[in-house]
Image (cartoon, rainbow, N blue to C red; front, side, top):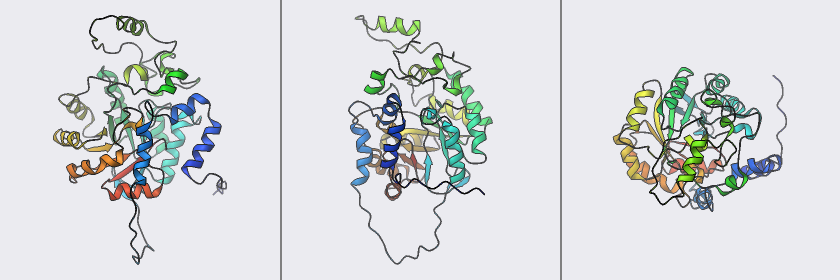
Length: 350
């Protein structure tokens, strides 16, 4: 076996990794990864929440033989940590999600794949081998697009769908708007290339050169004094047009999604932050919850995920698993989340 390259001793912490990454990324990529919604207060509070808690260490417990693994999706995860679904990973490295899949397989960690990945879900599955993976899903208003994606995920062996429920509209991220963010060539939103022309598949933010005539017409009509009415997105799939879905609701969408996914794939909700919604999730028979606020990138001023966790755990009462993401920077943060009742922790863009 080839020896591993020596570890960079100047990159021992997440903060140092962030410094290294900042020096290697172009401005629009760096801004995209680092920014939260509006002033970024929720983004900051996600990590600050962990600093409010202190650990009460016990001693003389004989830890000479320990097992940190946890059962998850029919396998053993080496530690209670997974790689959260994050979009467009080829921005950080040309191998993108493929590299993440290989790293997760080697470390024995579950991987979450974003619908808006820069590698196809089939290629990520091939790189994952037998390692479990889940698909993050934005449920489009035109359900046929989502149905096709779910069927592909089933065929590729994905264990669960994590439905993002905190994006009825896109959060305001000022640097993305200012940078007129677009996915650079040669990368594409790989899972929708059949549904999108090559230009639209690269589009991320509104205001790009690929804005459709329908969108231009909607913009023009929105300046009138008439009450705003919602029009479902048309044309090629892009993140800014199709990811936000203001029509998502408990009464119809969860049942439809369960019918599409079960029994091969579980249905989880990602973005639950209150006990009230956790109760509704139990009522509608979802398989699990991820306490999340989209990494502080959606609703600025929302409660930090660690602060929201205890009330959701209390409601769940062990009937379904409760996971959490947002603000995790250290192994002790994972410990604190577990101590507050989480079954598992996800890390995306620390």
